[in-house]
Length: 328
Image 1 (cartoon, rainbow, N blue to C red):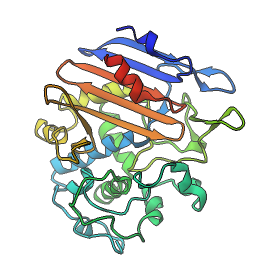
Image 2: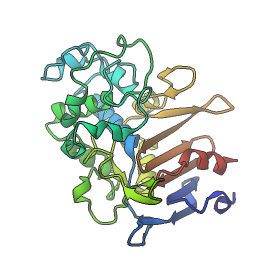
Image 3: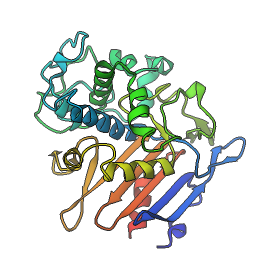
Image 4: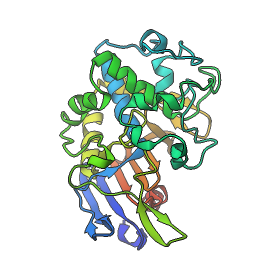
């Protein structure tokens, strides 16, 4: 596997490939700070956009395991604010598998640019999951609850709010105490863009008019929410996979449910907070991914061949195409 030969000269980020839990390729490329020529390193923290949904899903399943929640619990019986036109009978399960029909503040079927959200609503106001509520609480349901699968960001914002309601902690505090620290993911967290800790990469968008890169600080939430926005490293992602698949985070029964096909539209396959790719032998390979302006992330784990691929870019490179080339 000659990975170096498939990497273009413009790639900015990190690629890591493991087989049988042993690293067979791991290398950073480009810069965490382009202007100051600060290079990306293995322990550089990268934004991961929607990839954070998997952490929220695990946190919800942990609460189910602790009997604090049930999959069939309805949001109307948990949340204490006015849901307006949102169906109060939406269940935890329907939020987890994107069949709730809840109005999506960023409907990717009709909106192309995440940055467009902030034309009339300042992104610097988004510091907690509850701060996103004004972007969808007054909208009608997208479709009847349970009718179909449609990827939905608001659903995971609500799951983050449910974590906060049940635990009394901010959702990211709960994730840190119950997922990140137990897994040794010491370089993972939800950080405010104007208060980033050391070793965080800037995320860059290319301006084709001025022929230069600029950072995405006005294009994404000031801090991540239940819908995504965690910063992490390739090493921490590998630690997460190891803990998750060895039943150290949730029981084997719940893990099986998480990685089992829960819903499909015959094009996309989804479990609970985890995408699934159908392989030639009909088995399912779990992966989670994220994309924002200047951010692209993908990590997958082929449990048959024990191959784990993680690719992160802080200039929005096509990590999905790169993953397919690696597998050729």
